[in-house]
Length: 122
Image (cartoon, rainbow, N blue to C red; front, side):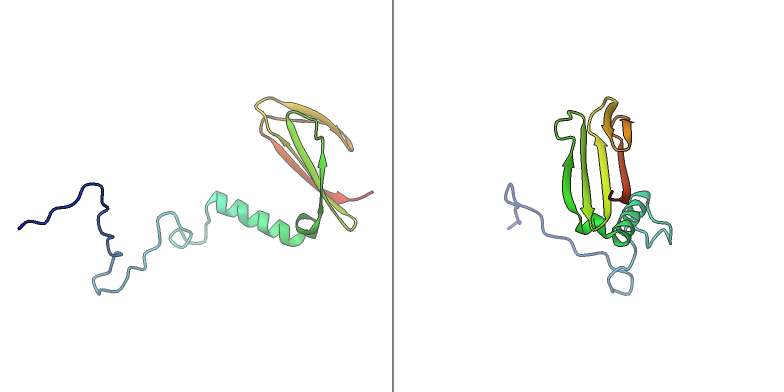
């Protein structure tokens, strides 16, 4: 009798790679920082900088959300305010340049550009 496989079923899971000694492989995954030494990928490095920024500035985490320019069709803007600090963010969410007037004056954002500013209230 020959073994037949039913149509539409999955094949069995394969075992993990093993070294010649029989123990699980300890190779680093392709593209991981362990394999490439201490030079992280650009996206990973970017996220590490963002996390460090959050740790240095409590207003980013604790601040009250204050929407800005709610009627603007191309710019999404908000601030976070906490104690005497403010974090302001403006994002052009269009493929066209966008202009808005915000303190301290007018600003023009390129398509898909975002700007963040940390400062004091007042």
